[in-house]
Length: 178
Image (cartoon, rainbow, N blue to C red; front, top):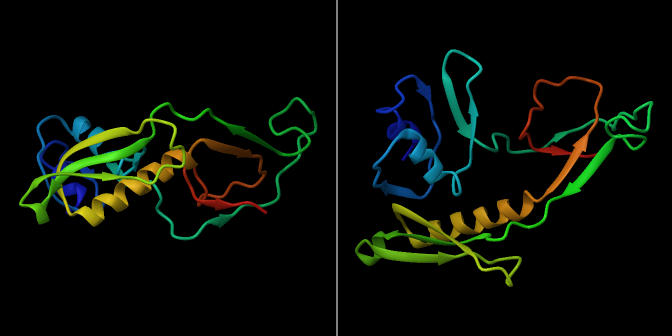
């Protein structure tokens, strides 16, 4: 199943060729925004509205990271990146990590199924995502594990100062540091 098949009735001029791996069926009742909000924890999207057409793509479009050049050092210590050329930050962990996915399991005659992620913070109560969708149990487990991993991974940020503009590198690009 692809996102464009679900969103085309609501948003006719939209390029949304996004495969929704593991999704076999979905009960949709609401706007396109409601649909995207419902799918976002499990299938994160990148939205581009710069051209004449709205484009939706998977958040990670590239298979391999792009190498960044060495960090550019600022002349003044007060400028972004200072003498190191980069800045690190770590957000406090979200209070409720995604850890449980409720779905309809086709192997159990479409009865509700629950899959749990392996959490990196077992002391936190996991947030439950309720998805009115048909997903096989192994695919649901993979989706909730990936969602939990993305949420934990997204707590760390590094801002890197560069001098050259590279059109291949944009916000959300997968990069490697020297």
